[in-house]
Image (cartoon, rainbow, N blue to C red; front, side, top):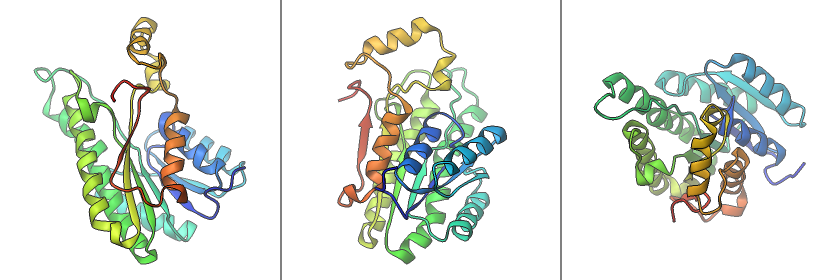
Length: 249
């Protein structure tokens, strides 16, 4: 096991599958103790807790909805009680409700904004208090290439992910003097369980449109998280790290 993050405690929201799961694993493999959330995937959450613990670090999953303000506040209180500190927060929880604007319902728009954007506000507001007290911390928000360039059929998702970028830059300015860093990572086309249900021809076309001719993996994102979580990036804040194989330069 690498000891880059040894002694640090990390929280990852939405970690039962996909990118979040990959992030939790990489943080643990680099020595961090890992708290994580899941919403409906209880079995996957319990399995992840066991797998992370087997790596020799402390791990605990919490069934919690980051888009609920009070639940997010309670989550941070519980993590501090269980782990004693909180050094790294990865706001990863997110959903899609794709559709052209003419067919998009108010509910589809609001659900995505609440889950993807409000959750970042809720968790960051709750975690800033202990981080301010210890005068250190790294907050990493998972945005998207879609939040930068937009995408037809994803106006709600793009708006939520663009909002995360503005929020990230503002928090970096607010908390920088207390040695708390806030950065964002913008994944491109990452191949996960979600993309696994797409037609192979569609996936092939997407790969061909990427200069590196492949989709990314959860580890590609997780490795970037490890860098921003570690002391290797202590002078980096307010930035958006694009991890997209060159699809946006």
